[in-house]
Image (cartoon, rainbow, N blue to C red; front, side, top):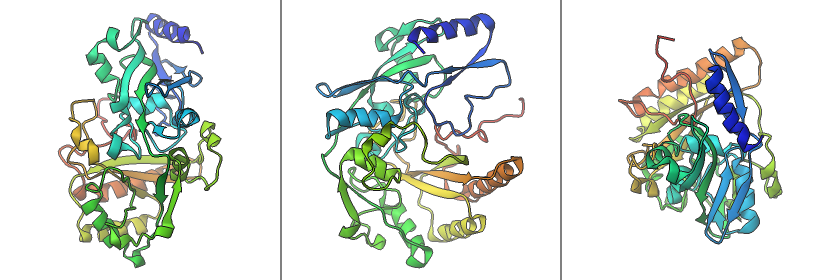
Length: 367
C-alpha cells in the first residue's frame, strides 16, 4: 500500500457510502476491524511500517502499521540508552496502541506513550494530509488517546526517553501456601508509592519483604532485552525476534479490565482467590499506576486514568477449543470473575481501559 491509497480509500468510501474499517498492526481483542452490520471494507495499513529514528534530537517518525517490537529494535540499533515508553507485547501495532492511550512498563517513570507524541500525519475525511500545525491542537489532542476515528493516522512523531545501559529484572512466584494473599494485600499498599524507577506486576524490591526477593532472583540486561524477558522469551533469545509479526501465542481469548482505587481487604482477597480456584481459567493481572502518572492532568490527553488509581486490572482468559459452545463457556467464566470483583473496583462509573477492547461495555438496547 502507498500513502495515496489511503486518500483514495477515504474518497471512495464517501462516494459509495461504505464503512471503512482500519487495520493497523494488531492486536484487537474483539476483532472489530473485521466485522460490521453494514457494507464495509478494510483499509489494511499493515505494510505502512517505516521507522526513522533520530538519536540526535531523541525522536522518531513511526508509521501506524509498524509494531512495537519493530520500534524497539530500530531504537536499540542506534542506542542502548534510549527507549520508547510503550507496551510490553512486541506484536502490538503502533497505530492501535497509541490511539487508545497505550501503556507499558516505563509508565511510572515516563508516563504513557501518548504523552510522548509530538506530531502526527493524518488523512482527514476530505482526504487531506495534515500535520499537527495544519490540523490544529483540538484534533491533535483527540488522536493522541481518544480512540475514535477522527481520520486515518499515517504516522506519529514520538519522543524517545533515556534509560540506563543496564536494567534489572526479576520474577518471583508464590503460592497460596506461601502467603500469596498477604503478598497481594501488601502489594496494594505500596505498589503505587514505590520509586518511579520500579514497575511491578506482583513483584517488588526489598521494601516489600513479604515477597522474599533475593539478589539471586535479579538479572541484569539491556532495556531491549528486558522487553523479551517481560514477554517470556527465554533468556538469550536474539533481539531480532522483535521484528517478527507472529504472536507468541495464538488462542481464543477474552479480555476485560477494571481500575482499583482502594486496596482490596484481606477478606475480599480470600473471597476472590476462592472464586478463581473454582473458575480455574480466568487470570488477573495488576499493573501499577501513580509515579509520574500523578503529574499529568486527566484532561491533558483523552486518557483520564491518572492520579487516584492504584492499578489497572486485566482479566485474561485463553482457550484452545473451537466452537460456540466452548466460547460461551469461557466467556461466562470471565464474566463471572468480573462480577465477583464488582464490590472492590471503581464505581460510578466503573472504569475500563479502552485498548482492552470489550464489547460487553457500552451496549444499548437499540441495536
